[in-house]
Amino acid sequence: MPQLAVFPKAFMHALCKDGSMCLAEWISLAVKLNVEGLEWYAGFLEMANEKNWPGFRQQVEDHGKVIPMMCCSPDFTHPDRVFRQREIEKQKRWIDMTFALGGSYCRVLSGQRRPGLSMDEGVKLAADCIAACLPYAQERKINLILENHYKDDFWEYPEFAQKMDVFCKLVESLDHPCFGVNYDPSNAFLAGEDPLELLKRVSHRVLTMHASDRYLKEGTLEDLRKEENGTAGYAKRLSHGEIGKGLNDYDAIFSELKRVGFDNWISIEDGVDGMDQLERSVTFLRHKLEQYWPVTANHN
Image (cartoon, rainbow, N blue to C red; front, side):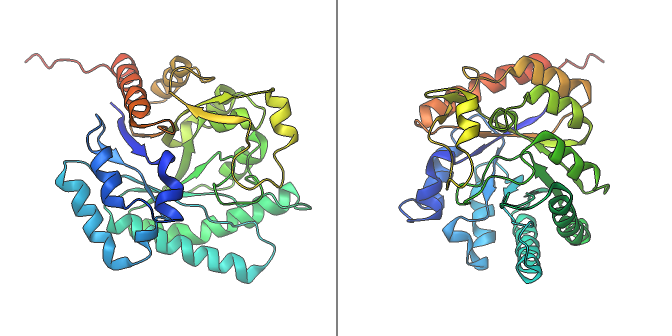
């Protein structure tokens, strides 16, 4: 059966920008949930000091949980070669961070969809940078996972490989045993596309998943697509919400994942309206996992 992790979506500013929350506080909240792991974010303020890394792993493991996944946002589509090389070095440090925390999966992205960047050029830039990181990851038994992303919280432009055809082209250009997909169904809606169509195109490459649900607070998805460029952070029309009550069809998603033999980590990006909401989302997903990956008794 796949295992569940949680991500502190509601506390990103507090943990990454103003320091109004410390990681020990988040850990104390998360370990009370019915999950096996806590997904980490490379931009947590307290992770800047490498001496802190072993201590956070110990704190989590002391509660019987693990840190399976690292969420980070390399920007590999910048036109300047020196900038891209710095991003490769940052990604390698995040791989080291993942290793130190005991994780096995470290996210990569393509980069920002800057004006004037063609599809072929952007795919080549991103693929070359990811390929440059893969031997380093393999040495540490870390898998790099490319997410069909919308936009990092702190980026100006949306993800270069946001659109399905671009994302699939980038995935297909990278054939390596330590590379796969982190599938996020909600992000496909933001590209104006069907998350199930995307899943069927890449399900054989999916190593991990982000689970969330999204709602439009006003207007339509078409309105959202018209205003996405050049806006820092997430679009105002969009809202995270309780999983199972939004746009995603989790029965169809889990049916396809079960069909291809998926049995790995699902990290929950939720709880923006409080820990009670996050707990309800955990309960919903736990029930679905038991439905699609039932535990059978061993009768000897």
